Amino acid sequence: MATVKATATVSRAKAHSFRSSAPPLRTSQPLSARGCTPGRAAPEGPRGGFCTAPRAVSPTEPTYAPLGKSVSAFDRVQILAEALPYLQRFADKTIVVKYGGAAMKDPTLKARVVSDVVLLSCVGIRIVMIHGGGPEINKWLDKVGIEPKFHNGLRVTDEATMEIVEAVLAGKVNKSIVSLINKAGGKAVGLCGKDANIISARQTSDKELGFVGDVTGVDPSLIRAIVENNSIPVIASVASDENGQSLNVNADIAAGEIAASLGAEKLILMTDVPGVMEDKDDVGTLYKELDIQTTRGLIDKEVIAGGMIPKVQCCVRSIAQGVQAAHIIDGRQPHSLLQEILTDEGVGTMITET
Image (tube, rainbow, N blue to C red):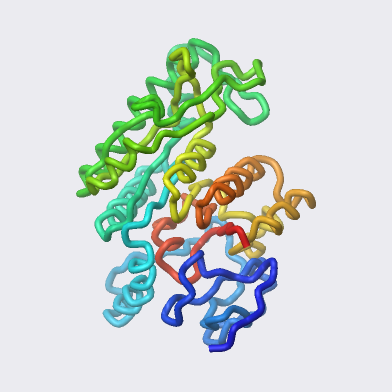
């Protein structure tokens, strides 16, 4: 098969190995600019392949249909056949998933995320989950009469708020996720960053934020022991400093640093947006794949702006430390984890080094 000269934006098929049987490549162009149609060879990439029609999709438009009677037996076999190269590629590899957003609030979405995680674990992929829990924290702050405050997009965490944050994240939210995974047939172990000093942190220099922590180090030994026992670590983003003071750590940042310390194959951030888009209001402009250079250019052009900047920076930092690929996906889309990891097209934005 002919080889295409690499460019800054050439696709890399979700950082899979370049073998002829592997799935077709993604492109870093927005969907609306891709120029490919169903059933025709993709225009770039050393393996060719097929791509889906570049149509704009409403953020609320259903993109998933359950495998019921409407799906033929042949189609089900095709789905399994498409997934097989990915299952082979990622067997015994570590994938770190940051779980948050609407997927934590909606019971149906929560159940689907849990089933995806258990399935991936059962087929031999090593899943590590990091979670936040902002809405649940706000709920309990309201119950005790504390008004949530934010500064530069981060939660202002005074002493009273820190007590609630730790109790909710490391207690209620963490154990709820663990229970759901165990009920679904997985083996989950609930942790927080304090346990075995998984996450070391120091108080951020912005004193207005209070007890918010910057990650200074990660000790992955306990996480490795758990995944080697075929279990799923579920980690709340609460850490402590050298004096034992509890600190609230941004879950995206915690996930990125843990992924780097484990030498993970992938970091996946579940969010409430489809991914990086040229026009934030048009899903048809979703970037399916970006490299670091292009990503930084989009930040400079303010295409990537607002709350997406720290998420993208987290991805770039993890890749610079050895993670093979980082993904930003929409947790509101049912089974988005499986679609991103086990299908040709994926559902979000993948960021790689080149």
